[in-house]
Length: 298
Image (cartoon, rainbow, N blue to C red; front, side, top):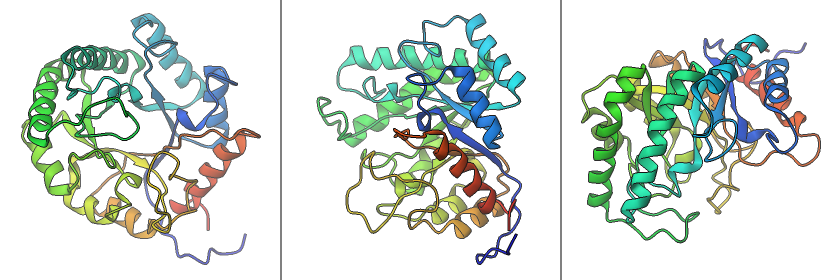
């Protein structure tokens, strides 16, 4: 094989992919999706918690434990649990019933993590405004911060008991925790090792550079989303994100920043649009891209 034109260092990090990139459950069973990810060469998968279905409050601990066992039998780990439910049921929503429902769902997610056998739960602590939830009224920043901290404090004892990390994700265009300093202040305010950061490289690409955040957040980072974005595109919504290496992210700088803070965990590709035709190709393409990025090729 010819040598890569991009000098590549070997990085000791693990490859993972979020299930939103797969046509599950529309065209694949859970087992088929797990087997595809394993065959493509992923070390782990990030599952998504829904309001209904196999991974939801409807599932018993036994059901969820069986899913974790299935994944490990296939030969792949569950790198974490994620959920879109933090948007319709935001922990900082102006409607107290929706806030309460969001908190109830988050407690279910902690239980699900323990049963599945993963220690990582992605938490969206709140939002001032989210364009993709047009019916939700904006929340003043100080109110958003107060409610978010109250919610995390309520979840923390259960998370500590379950051995689960509450990993706070930096979100794009939601008006909250939009600088590394804000994120550090928020996370450190709980004085608990169980409140950490789920760092998303793509979510800050419109205004910032992920390699700058990583060095400041340091060992607070417990889990990672790799999302590709392009500063050449003005649109910034869920359609902005693209396959790995097809954007303007300075990946050598990002990976070196992760390495310098001692990060050795999962790098999870997150993408919201499974391909309509030959969706398996995206999974293999992503795994191959990660091999080049991590120095497993070239």
